[in-house]
Image (cartoon, rainbow, N blue to C red; front, top):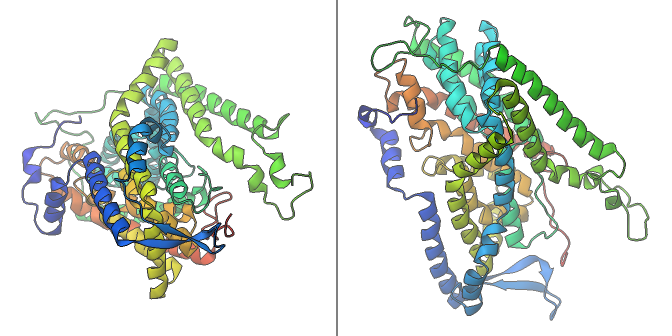
Length: 547
C-alpha cells in the first residue's frame, strides 16, 4: 500500500509548486544540513572573536565591576572548545534533552501501535460516526490520532476514503479531510503527547544554552490549553473547507464504495479493526487506561504525595511563601507526564494485544518495544547532529549574542510583541516548505529565537506554541513532506490520474485557512495574556540580575 508514486506524478509541476519541489529536492538530508551548519558556525565564531563581537548579559553581573556582564564571542577552534568537542561527545549526545523524552514515550507508543490498539481506536471512532457528522469526526480523530504517530497516516487516511465512498460521498474529500487533520492539524490535540516531549526538550536545551534562566525547566503540559484551543478552532475550519470548498469542486462520486487497484480489481483493507474481537480489546485497553489514571491520582493525593512538592511554597525556615502558586507544587506532576504516557501506551497496548492475540507473551511485548526503537534509528542520527549544533552554538556564545542584538533590533522597530509572534508563525510556515522535520527545524531555530523572545517578554512556551502553528499548517502543501507520496498513492487508488499537483491544489485551501486562523489565535492569545498551559504564561519576565 505504501508503494512509490508513479513517475507521472512528478511531471507538469510548474510555478511556485514546481519551484518548491525543485528547490527542496536540492537540499541535503537534514543530518548533513546540521553538519554544514556546524562548519559554517566554526568559521563565523572565529571571525566574530577576531572582530570582538559581544553583548551585555541581560541578567548576570560582572563580579569585578559590579556592572552588567559582557559576553564575547568565543572561537570554536579555541583549545578549550576543541577539547570539549571530543572529550564530551558522548555527554553532548546523551544529555540532549529531547532524546530521553522522545525515546521513553516511543517505547510505549510502539507497543500501542504494533498491537493494533491505535488503529482499532481510530477505526472504531470513525466508523461509528453518523453520516451527517462524518467530516468533523474524521477531522477530530485525525488530530487526536497524532498521538498514534504513523498509524494516523497509514490507517486513518485510507479508511476515511473508504468511509466517504460508502456514504456516497467523494472519497478524495475524505482523504483530504483526514490528511488536513493528521498533518495540517499536527500540533492540535486535546492533550500533550510525544510531539510536546520532542519540542519542549529542544526548547529546554535552548534555554539552558542561553543561561538566561537557569531555573526554567520544560513542562510537557506547557502548551496544553493552547493546543486544545487549536483543536476547537481547526475542527470547524476543516469541516467547512471539506464540505463547502473541496467536495463541491470534486463533484459527485459514482465510482463505488471500494478503491480500485492498478489491475482494476476492488481493493479494501483486510484488517478488521472494528469486529467483536477488536471491541473486546478496546474494552480491556479502556480498563488499563483507567488503572493508569487512578495510579497517577493516587500519587498526587495518596500518602507521601510523591508527585506533589509540598516544600515548594515554604521557605528554608518552614514559613509559607505568600502568593505561592499551586503550580509550583505541581512541578513533579508535570515532569512525570513523559513517564505517564509511557505507562499509558504500554499498558493499553498490552491489554489490547492480549485480548486480540497480537501479544501472546512477554516476549512479544519486548519485541514490539525493540521494533519501535529500530524505527527511531534515523532520529538518533539526526539527534546526534542537532545536539552538537545546539551545544556548539552555546559554547561560542553566538546564540545569546544574536538573541540580545536581535531583541534590540525588534524593539527598535516598535512592532507589538503579538505581531512578532505572528511573523514567527509565518516564517516557520515558509521554512516548513523546504525542511519537513519538525525537530530539525526547531533545533535550528530555537537557539536564537527562544532566548530572543525571552528578552522581548515572550516565554519559552510562547515561542514553542508560535513555532508549532507555522510548522503544521504548511505540512499538507509541500511535496517534501515524508508522507506526501503515500497520500498520493491512497488518492490514486480512487482516481488513477490524480497527480502531485492535484493533491497540492486540494490541500492549499486547508493550509491557508489553518495558517491564518493559527496566526490570529496566537496573536489574540498574547494580547489577552491567557496561560498556554498549567503554570505556563505566554508573557515572560527575566529573573533578577545575577539570578
